[in-house]
Image (cartoon, rainbow, N blue to C red; front, side, top):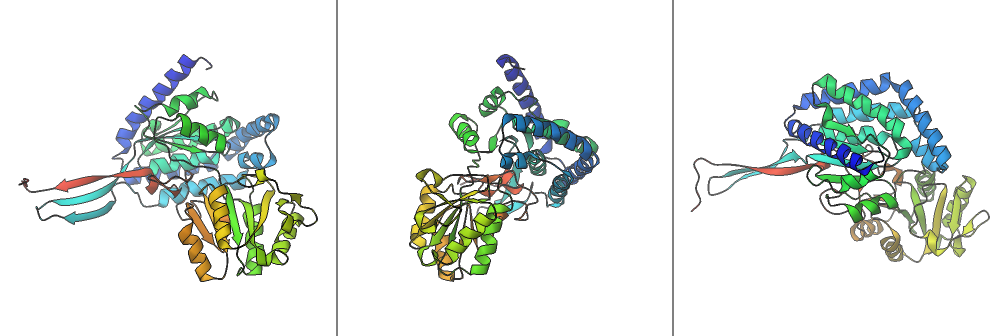
Length: 420
C-alpha cells in the first residue's frame, strides 16, 4: 500500500463509492437510518470483546510509539467506554431526522410559495487522530444527516477503528442501506490524507479532528472546504465576584476529569483581588491533585513551576495548567483573545453584568458561566454525539451534530406563475 499510485487508486475508488451511496442516502427513509444505527449499537455491544482485543493492539502500538499518558487515555477502550459508544449511537438514532425539515416558508405577492428545507451535504471526509470512538460518532452523525462519509482515523487507533467500523457496516446491512454509506480508509499511509484533501470531485467537506499539526496541515493543503476544529486552548477566568466553593469544584473538574479532551482547562486567569486568597487556594488544590501548575510570580506557591512565555496559548492535554493574575475582566478577555483558540472559555462569577460582558465581548464558539468546560461536548449539549467542535465561523460552529452536517435548498411552488 506504499505506492502512491496505489493510494490514489484506493482513494478514488472510495470517493466514487461514497458519491454513489450519498445519492441514495439523500432520500433514505428516516426509519431506515434509525434502524441502521440501532443495529450498529447492538453489534458494537455484542462484539465488545473483539473491539477491546483490537484496542489492545493499538495500545501496544501507542506505547511503543511513545504516546503520553493523556494520549493513551484518549486511545483506550474498556467496557464502560464501549457502553458509552453504544449509548451515543442510540442517542443519535433517537434524534429527529434533520433531512427534509422545513426551516422557513413564506408566500410572495407574485403567488409563489417558498420553503427553505434541510438537505444533506453529500460526502463528508473525516480525518481524526487517536480517539477510536470518533469512528462511531462521525459515522452515526453523517448517516443521520443523510451523508456518506469517508473515515480516516489515526495510525494509533487503526485496529480499534476497524472493529467499530465493521459494526457500523453491519448496521447498514441490517437496515438495507448501502454499505458504502460509511467507508474507512484501509491504510495507515499518510498519503491517503493528502489525497482526501484534494478530492473535490467526490468529497464536499472535510472535518479534521485532532491537534494543531493535523488541523494546520488540513487548512494549508485542502482544496475541499473545511470545518476547522482547532486546539482547545481553554481559559477559565475567576472574577472578583466568583463564589469560592463553586470555583474550587469547577476548576478541579475542568482540569482533571479528563485531561486529554479538547474541553479540558489549560489556563487559569485570576482577578488580582483574589491572588492571595481564592487564587492561592485554587493553585494549591490543583497541585495537591497532581497538576503541574505553570504559575506566574503572584501565584507561585510550593509545588508550582515558573510560567514562561511558551505556557500562554499552550494546549497541554495533560496534568498541566498555566496560571496568571489579571487586573480585571477586560485584561482577562484581552489575554483570551491573544492566546485562545476560539474553542471554549469560561467565567466564574456571581456578577451578572460581568458575565454579560464576557459573553458579549468574546467570540469563542462556546462561552460558559459557572460551569466546567468539560461540558464542551455535543453529547452534553443534547446532540447525542458530535463530530467535533468547529472553531471557524462559516456554516458550522461549536459542537457539530447531525443538523450542522446539512445544508439547505429552496423549494418554490407556483401555479403557472410567470414573472412580469
